[in-house]
Image (cartoon, rainbow, N blue to C red; front, top):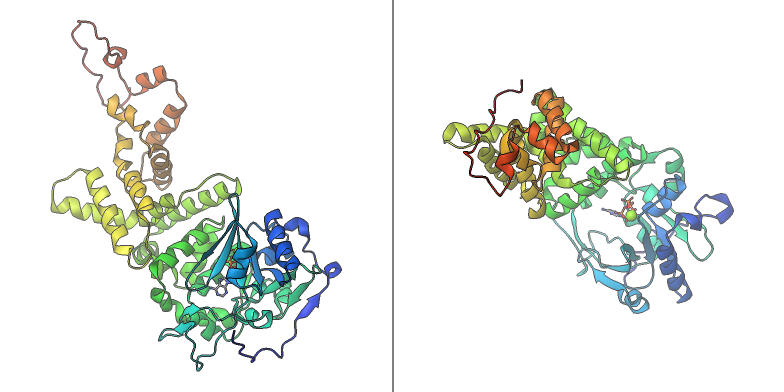
Length: 442
Ligand code: ATP
Ligand code: MG
């Protein structure tokens, strides 16, 4: 274990239990179990990060991170339900049913001029590996924002504040620990985290941080595409998607992730309204505890570029609108993979949802009726309703599809102008009646 020693002169401000509002009732039973067992086994054990921050803000934290001086192998020896993960950071994950408690060993930040096999940086200063263990008073300096660097000590329920996090929480300010320029170069994802926390906590980004962000937005392209997708999920599924988009655009970060969407948003106000409306819906769903799917949001982001690419394809060769949309969705998501890698389990359904859009124009006959049974119907319908909001789909069409979902099987046959006989399997030897006209409803 290597100690850098450079920050050891710092003493934390220790806030005793009566002087703060973090109570054990805010902490999940599983997290408490891990904290207590580490403590009883002679290790230091602190709750750190969002759990402490959100509890101080009365936000009912859901995610609990623990910091300890126990090494990952020692943590594993204490818990049967424990797995060691990660290369960049080696972490222990202790599992209780569906809940995972992340246990990290204190780490030292490493000076650039020191040579460490366990710590590596690239040419821009980005940290590639970071596994030098340390003490709590070293660990604190490698955390990102002061509000994320508060340690709740299970030994006496006090909070240790080295970096002024409590004061910054009171002022609702996101302040990076150390030199913002250096800290953002080390890990450009911190720019996305700044935006995510600003949106979620309604904090302002400290001017020292925002000016560095304006300068360094481009560095996001050096971050592995898989990590950016993870961060995309966290940013847009937390219930503050609309605000997040606004901030990402303000800091020119959105264009690093979704360049084509970003360009379309800049030039097309109608598309902007479409995207905003989708994000507002998403935020409402999250607030109501309803499920959301990232593929829907990706479909929304890609819609303008996909529609354009589909038109180009149709101009070039003969194909149906649906085919061209499916192909264009494939092309556009493929063009993004190097930047933000979207797993197939999302791009597949997204393509289906987009390709179904022209089918909503078919409001009679079996083909129309069958759309209701399609496995992507629900998402495609929601998507179509959004399109109707911006005038891309006739409001009557949207109403038709809203209504038929409520109807009985019989009523549906009528709505889709399907004669009852044509549906029954045991057909009489009666000449088949002509299918009702598909022309506009009388
Ligand atoms: P939430 O869980 O609500 O998203 P959080 O602050 O707990 O917020 P996590 O990603 O769970 O975020 O990380 C836990 C803690 O680890 C953070 O509070 C911070 O102290 C530290 N941390 C996480 N990511 C980074 C990073 N990229 N750079 C520096 N410190 C980080
Ligand atoms: Mg957390």
